[in-house]
Image (cartoon, rainbow, N blue to C red):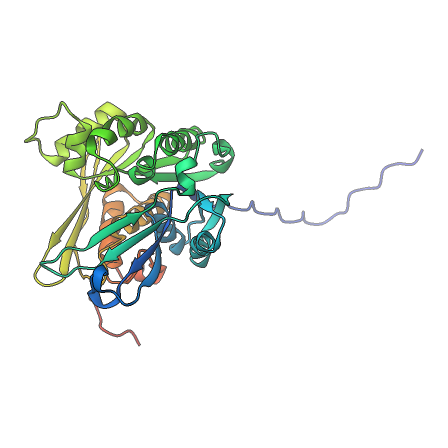
Length: 349
């Protein structure tokens, strides 16, 4: 028997550093083709329609992906050219997709009349018979889809599609929280989809799974039926934290300024207090997608380790910034966020 060879002398090989795990965000929701007459025309006088893609959850994921957070959109989609156009929109902005295709479904549409003061913008939905309406809570392996995720999100719009989608939202958020992810939910009540009387019991069933809630004062009054009607919005937020166990309630405010200018603010309410961001103004090019942009940037900031006040300020800035671009998709770049708060310049060259 021979002796084992001596190990080579000299310095040890350098250790290979571990590959960092980048937290990712997943979102469940329906996205739609948005059809709008150009030039602020009304639909009954339109001679052509511009095509965009919108959807609260996808919009938020696009915002997060634009800041470098890997993002995945989960949905059921019509297996036809219009459905594939919607999926291609996600891919164009760096959002991965996990889709159950339905060859018998319709692609959802919504028609938009872009208003200018004093005429409001208006939305006409055409989203019956769509694939997401047949979503069931066991359609996806939620635990696997949220494994390693830093955040998961959905909204009240998805809950409004029916009992199956609402149960799927709760299943996603429950699984995500079980995997250690922060869960986020935007109430996003749409009166043309369901009444508050229909919405409240469904939403109250989802809220116990939510860490970060985006809501307005009106939303909170509906969701907290025992709250005093004259309660301050921060007090309502604290009541929601006490009742549902939220980590944070995010309150967005948008003031209409002269002309087409707005001012956006966000306050993050936690059990420890109120954390207000700054006020950010913008000239409005498009009225859609501001709340979704705020949510996506808020989650990106939280995953980066920012505190509540910084998270609130970035979210407010994102909402204002989104108003400056046509379409629902949040086309924010890291360089845009880096210039937040700096003196504005008309041309960068």
